[in-house]
Structures are given as structure tokens and as C-alpha cells.
Amino acid sequence: MTGPRPRDVFASRILPLHRERLALLVIDAQNWVMDEEKRQNRPEFYADARSFVIPNIARLIGASRSHGVEVIYTVMENLTTDGRDRGLDYKLSNFFIAKGSLDAKVIDALKPGPDEIVIPKTSSSLFNSTNFEYLLRNIGIDTVAVTGFLTDQCVDHTIRDGADRGFHMISLADACATDTRARHQAALNAFKGYCRNETTASLIAAMDKDFQCSRS
Image 1 (tube, rainbow, N blue to C red):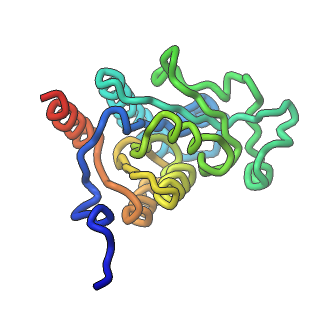
Image 2: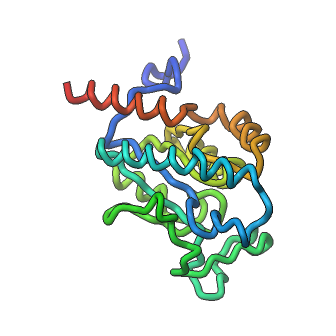
């Protein structure tokens, strides 16, 4: 008789959370992205980012810190002064975020803590142009809750790549955004099969419940 090993059979993507194996990832919540005057015209993005996405990410960061969950940031940032290290797509898109610049910094509303990791990247997927996977495995993390910008670009790529690399990925529908609400919803629908789908409130409730159970 053939079939999968019992440990490879899951009734659902919703598994108990473990604080030491969970990371909250904040993608590209940086000054360059939020500089409305210098970026392309996208009123729906800025309205949603400022009214609820950034506040929701802040709530998730607060909950993660209170529970001892790892919070990791990534920002678009050149590693060289002339940006020669950038991926081809960043060059074609004219994405040039100078090394060490204000544009490369996480916005003040979501400022990293003193011992939290900030990873510069030069491609859409965090897994492709950084040592993110190496760091996760060193820390012992197997589950990643993804927030930030943009839903149909860096968030999408990271969720799909993480799933293919054997990580349990979690999408936060109200803690990410892209140029338009229609594009945001289309992206959520497109990658929902690769991840556990939550909201800010439901993930915080799950952390509160699962971490309380782990203490009892």
C-alpha cells in the first residue's frame, strides 16, 4: 500500500502557532515607498496605507514583540554606491535607493527595535537577493507572516517563494497594499493557495490563543 507519510498529511493550513518558530516580516515599509510627492500617482494606495495598513502593521509588530516573536524587516536598498548590484528588473524599473539613504530607512511609524533584523534587498522576492532563508533556518523559524508593500509584487513573490522553500506562509489581507484596491484583491486571490490567509485581528487572536495554550 502506498501513500504519504502520516506526518505529511494536513487537515488544514491553519496549524498551531509557536512563538519561537514564527516571524513577522515587514516588506518595504520605507520612506521611498511612502514619498507620495515623488512616486507615481496612486491615491488608493496612499489612502489605504496611511488609514489602516500601516496602523495594522504597527499592531502586529506590537503583538509580536509582546509575545517574543521575531520581527524582521526588509527594505529596497543598493549595496553599492552606483547600484550595480541591483537585479535587472530594478534597473529596468529605475529603482535606485541609495545605500544608507533616508529613502532606504523604515518609516518612523514602524521603526525597528534595537535588536531587530533589517535586510536590504534588490529584487522583488526577499528569498532571491538576500540571506533571508539562511537566517530563518538559523533562528529556527518555519512560519512567516507577511506584511507590507506591494501586495502584487514583493509580497506575492515572497509568499510563493517561501511556500516552495518549505515555509508555512501567512498572508495578512489588511496589512498590505498595492497601487489599486482591485490589484490588491486580485493578488490576494492569486496567491491564496500558497498560504494561510488571515487578517490583523485574526492573527493576533490566534497568537494570543496558541501562545497562552503553550504556557499552560
